[in-house]
Image 1 (tube, rainbow, N blue to C red):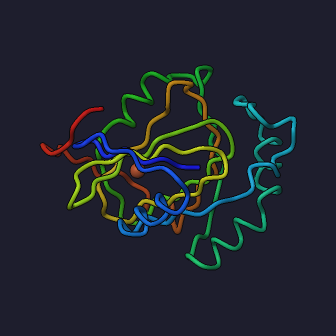
Image 2 (image 1 turned 90 degrees about the vertical axis):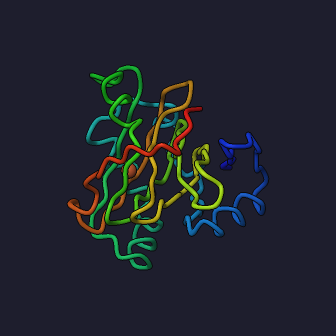
Length: 179
Ligand SMILES: [Fe+2]
């Protein structure tokens, strides 16, 4: 279950209802998939073959199709990041740049952990710490970035309306406070 940390005040928001209410107030979609549906062999596995990725898509086909039908996604894939990912340091550095997209950025966490850092107009930046089963969508044109947590391992399903909608527009925001 996701947890929130507001960077300006260090306030944490925990508990399903509280997190959902907070993210609703920020127009961030927050839903769940059943993390237990993932086949045993794919749990805690961060070096996925193309076959493994296809198996993940097949496992969550109903959830993916449901999201796509409700929110207009046309394409989807699986990403896996960990210390064995080539250039992981470079990638993480690139990730940690505040940016926006012209479509929403939706991720379903399948295994591992990750954080979205998102800007609220009223509260400043807040972290959303994500676990397996968490599905989150950062609204279009909203300052954000994504990074890994200390374990530096994640597998997530990404969905897109169109690939070009996901181009990142970097923003140098003086309001951004590092962790
Ligand atoms: Fe993004």
